[in-house]
Length: 511
Image 1: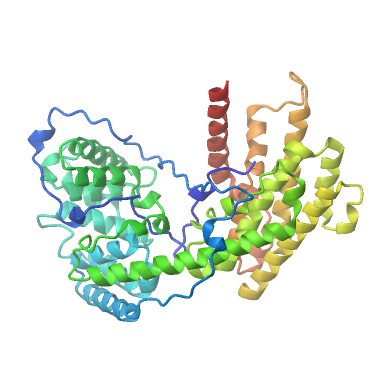
Image 2: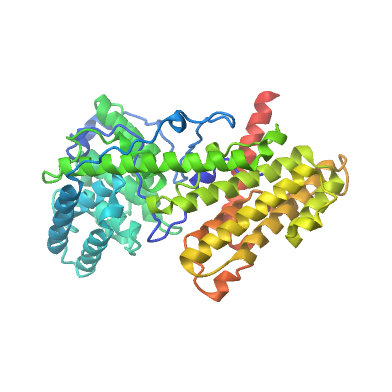
């Protein structure tokens, strides 16, 4: 079965890295936070948010019925005029980024952070790259004027560390050693009651990797004290703290959050509030318009396919699957790629349901054998709905291969087909287990089950198609990539266990 949390997957590259923000109600005090004394916190035992580094459970699943279209699909597309000063505002922000890059100022980092949180960084990719490159050089040469001293040093170091690591630069975690005591533990004396500094420390800790103990300590320390502070500050600051803890930047999705930035007072970044708000508005307007058109394409494709009408109990919900490729293919220019990946996900669900609910064992074996031959005439013994499914699958697979050929100059058809062949074979094994009697020797051991379940998750199908759609298969070795199951094994394992855990909870609840 394909997993219900595919939208949490990230393909992190320089071109597709997804900026993100907390889901919410950040107040205008985000850049001007009230300080509070440590004495207020002495007797408090925080118990609000789990301080673990495990990613929070995101769930972006619109409740859209298969036979219901969203209301905007019935509206006539209106080509409204975008704000006339869009280019002017872009130039203002771009010039400020260039100026900040030359000075290596803390203002420049605030501005980059604000731009990324609004999800408009794609407009300024070149300027941000140059600013962060210069800042990294200054950091290495210890010439950065705010990295090692000043009243806001913890805040500045944390922000610098996070932004640099997000951009792919390695920064050693020992930059935080100066904020620990002789035992290597973080000390509240270095925080000086600065909520913003503590939030930035928590955000920075999310980019730690295995073995970086100081960042694990930083996450626990900041989480603990932020939880305590949330009990004493006003509602706006408390909401801000809780949202940072629940949805840290690294583990959130920008496109689903930037619409919350409505207050012109939010960004106190050298008078750029109006320009940032204007650019954010236009970006959201354009994104909404593009997604409306994409949803129309997906809806029409499914109706024309027609197989959903014959299989009433199959999960024919392409509009529900459509939001899932967004984290992987976030750039608005990747419209065709998002539509293609939605079709792929829809077929994974359809095939899963055919194996689970409709197919007879003898037909399922032929079904699997037919997809290995990829010949429409080789499946005459199959029921009509299986024939139509194979025909549609072949059409979509060829369509995606041609799309990649035209855009990137290579055709990965064999690798794409191989993912489906592996999926069908795994479904056959799963159906054999399901039909086996209790206590039968045919029932799998846990390791055997998991090895097969990683394939039936469909993760490898989605990620391989996304890999080629993004143009990464630029040489012969990647075009003929066959060992995709091993490459995607870790991701598929996490998703499969996550999905099985959810199914187990449902079963327990229904019992």
